Image (cartoon, rainbow, N blue to C red):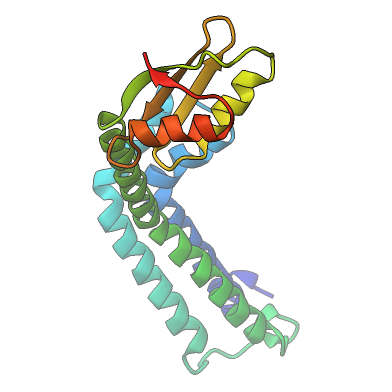
Length: 207
């Protein structure tokens, strides 16, 4: 029996070809990401990105091979299966179809990965820009809190300040009886901070 001409086995090789083409199309973007996740690095990793200009062509090849695989598996079978061959097994056609659909999902996922990563980067960059803009508006102020006389006092003062919307950080020290506050003046005022420490039992004033 010549297995090289077995239609069922040729269809399986076509599916493998689809996956290989998809891997080639996505390796320039997915490769460095996967290697980074595995802790693998080095200047040589940059060689993978050299395939980026070829990605549109590799994607076209992948989709072409995928379409050919569907044609091969779903077209009416003209070949005659030899007794005992893979395609003569009644389950072989179903196995090939299930394998093709699973492979299709895998392939489409690989092809979509660069675009998903691009969207994630855009979202992260937007968040970074928002944080930078927010930090540019922050101010620092020092409050005198003379009533701090115990080791737990700074903790209480810090908590009272941090509860305020717009207070990014607050650091109170017992040694100099002061509280250094970083805050957004568009969200919280000096009066509100003084009121917060006063309500906690520690009246304060601006240094």
